[in-house]
Length: 140
Image (cartoon, rainbow, N blue to C red):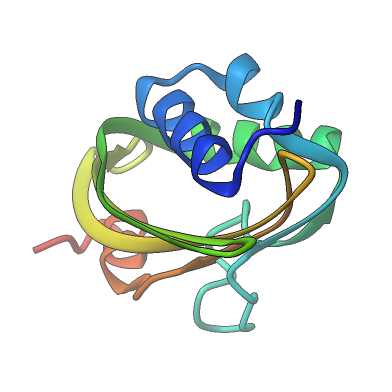
């Protein structure tokens, strides 16, 4: 039996916010397209984990880079919207950049496209200015 979009999204966000990477990766399709912002030279390219990746192994590598830079504190799902094969999760995160010790707080959106109970496309949206300020040691 194939999971519904809501079941897939709920499981994904539950695994993600509890830090269960193995379970989270199980929700990704073998051919997932993972779009974690678009790098803009001279602006957000100091976030070495961003870009477009394909396949769970590449996604895991990207997440490892993120976790090398950031100590994730709080990450919680604020709202989940599901329509057809699309799910939108609004998340709150409060974390610290390891190198600078600077904290940042963001609200970000993850847009999931689900097919046959697996996430086939993941795209993230946020204003990265607070992350960049923390990377630069200028967090407010």
